[in-house]
Length: 133
Image (tube, rainbow, N blue to C red):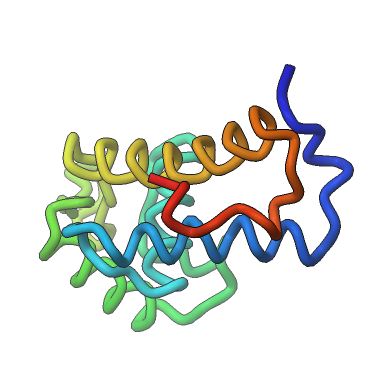
Protein backbone atom coordinates (compact mmCIF):
# COMPACT_ATOMS: atom_id res chain seq x y z
CA UNK A 1 0.00 0.00 0.00
CA UNK A 2 1.61 3.24 -1.13
CA UNK A 3 1.65 6.76 0.18
CA UNK A 4 -1.49 8.71 -0.68
CA UNK A 5 0.00 11.57 -2.66
CA UNK A 6 -3.31 13.44 -2.34
CA UNK A 7 -2.43 14.03 1.31
CA UNK A 8 0.98 15.59 0.69
CA UNK A 9 1.38 19.09 2.01
CA UNK A 10 3.07 21.72 -0.12
CA UNK A 11 6.14 21.45 2.11
CA UNK A 12 6.23 17.66 1.76
CA UNK A 13 5.85 17.78 -2.02
CA UNK A 14 8.61 20.37 -2.34
CA UNK A 15 10.87 18.36 -0.05
CA UNK A 16 10.33 15.20 -2.11
CA UNK A 17 11.16 17.20 -5.25
CA UNK A 18 14.27 18.57 -3.51
CA UNK A 19 15.43 15.08 -2.54
CA UNK A 20 15.05 13.85 -6.12
CA UNK A 21 16.87 16.89 -7.54
CA UNK A 22 19.70 16.62 -5.01
CA UNK A 23 20.20 12.94 -5.81
CA UNK A 24 20.06 13.60 -9.54
CA UNK A 25 22.87 16.17 -9.35
CA UNK A 26 24.98 13.77 -7.30
CA UNK A 27 24.91 11.24 -10.12
CA UNK A 28 27.09 11.28 -13.19
CA UNK A 29 24.19 12.11 -15.51
CA UNK A 30 23.32 15.19 -17.54
CA UNK A 31 22.41 18.17 -15.37
CA UNK A 32 19.30 19.52 -17.09
CA UNK A 33 17.60 22.87 -16.58
CA UNK A 34 13.90 22.95 -15.73
CA UNK A 35 13.13 24.00 -19.31
CA UNK A 36 15.18 21.13 -20.76
CA UNK A 37 13.48 18.66 -18.42
CA UNK A 38 10.05 20.04 -19.37
CA UNK A 39 10.84 19.53 -23.06
CA UNK A 40 12.18 16.03 -22.43
CA UNK A 41 9.19 14.98 -20.33
CA UNK A 42 6.75 16.41 -22.85
CA UNK A 43 8.33 14.43 -25.67
CA UNK A 44 8.36 11.19 -23.67
CA UNK A 45 5.00 11.50 -21.94
CA UNK A 46 2.78 12.77 -24.73
CA UNK A 47 2.03 11.01 -28.00
CA UNK A 48 4.22 11.83 -31.02
CA UNK A 49 4.78 13.41 -33.42
CA UNK A 50 6.61 16.30 -31.76
CA UNK A 51 7.83 19.35 -33.63
CA UNK A 52 9.62 22.50 -32.53
CA UNK A 53 6.48 24.49 -33.31
CA UNK A 54 4.26 22.06 -31.39
CA UNK A 55 6.52 21.96 -28.35
CA UNK A 56 6.70 25.76 -28.29
CA UNK A 57 2.90 25.93 -28.36
CA UNK A 58 2.36 23.27 -25.68
CA UNK A 59 4.99 24.70 -23.32
CA UNK A 60 4.13 28.32 -24.18
CA UNK A 61 7.73 29.30 -24.85
CA UNK A 62 9.48 30.60 -27.96
CA UNK A 63 10.71 28.40 -30.79
CA UNK A 64 14.31 29.63 -30.23
CA UNK A 65 14.05 28.54 -26.57
CA UNK A 66 12.85 25.10 -27.69
CA UNK A 67 15.70 24.90 -30.21
CA UNK A 68 18.29 25.73 -27.52
CA UNK A 69 16.83 23.07 -25.22
CA UNK A 70 16.80 20.52 -28.05
CA UNK A 71 20.41 21.37 -28.91
CA UNK A 72 21.47 20.55 -25.36
CA UNK A 73 19.30 17.43 -25.09
CA UNK A 74 20.70 16.26 -28.42
CA UNK A 75 24.28 16.72 -27.16
CA UNK A 76 23.43 14.31 -24.34
CA UNK A 77 21.78 11.86 -26.76
CA UNK A 78 18.44 12.16 -24.97
CA UNK A 79 16.54 13.24 -28.12
CA UNK A 80 17.17 13.42 -31.85
CA UNK A 81 15.78 15.64 -34.59
CA UNK A 82 14.96 14.62 -38.14
CA UNK A 83 13.52 16.55 -41.05
CA UNK A 84 9.89 15.57 -41.64
CA UNK A 85 9.90 13.92 -45.07
CA UNK A 86 6.27 14.90 -45.64
CA UNK A 87 6.98 18.59 -44.87
CA UNK A 88 10.67 19.42 -45.18
CA UNK A 89 10.11 22.74 -43.38
CA UNK A 90 9.23 20.84 -40.22
CA UNK A 91 11.61 19.05 -37.86
CA UNK A 92 10.44 16.00 -35.90
CA UNK A 93 11.75 15.48 -32.38
CA UNK A 94 12.28 11.81 -31.57
CA UNK A 95 12.92 9.72 -28.48
CA UNK A 96 16.11 7.73 -27.90
CA UNK A 97 17.02 4.74 -25.76
CA UNK A 98 19.38 7.01 -23.80
CA UNK A 99 16.51 9.39 -23.08
CA UNK A 100 14.27 6.55 -21.94
CA UNK A 101 16.99 5.28 -19.60
CA UNK A 102 17.66 8.78 -18.23
CA UNK A 103 13.99 9.37 -17.41
CA UNK A 104 13.55 5.88 -15.94
CA UNK A 105 16.49 6.51 -13.60
CA UNK A 106 15.09 9.92 -12.66
CA UNK A 107 11.65 8.44 -12.00
CA UNK A 108 13.27 5.80 -9.79
CA UNK A 109 14.64 8.58 -7.57
CA UNK A 110 11.13 9.86 -6.94
CA UNK A 111 9.59 6.40 -6.54
CA UNK A 112 12.32 5.35 -4.11
CA UNK A 113 11.71 8.51 -2.10
CA UNK A 114 7.99 7.72 -1.86
CA UNK A 115 8.72 4.08 -0.96
CA UNK A 116 11.13 5.18 1.74
CA UNK A 117 8.46 7.39 3.25
CA UNK A 118 5.83 4.65 3.03
CA UNK A 119 8.05 1.89 4.45
CA UNK A 120 9.28 3.91 7.40
CA UNK A 121 5.90 5.62 7.97
CA UNK A 122 7.69 8.91 8.46
CA UNK A 123 7.07 12.38 7.18
CA UNK A 124 8.77 13.25 3.88
CA UNK A 125 10.40 16.23 5.57
CA UNK A 126 12.30 13.88 7.90
CA UNK A 127 13.79 11.64 5.17
CA UNK A 128 17.56 12.23 5.03
CA UNK A 129 18.67 13.05 1.50
CA UNK A 130 21.19 10.17 1.47
CA UNK A 131 18.27 7.69 1.83
CA UNK A 132 17.05 8.52 -1.67
CA UNK A 133 19.20 6.58 -4.11
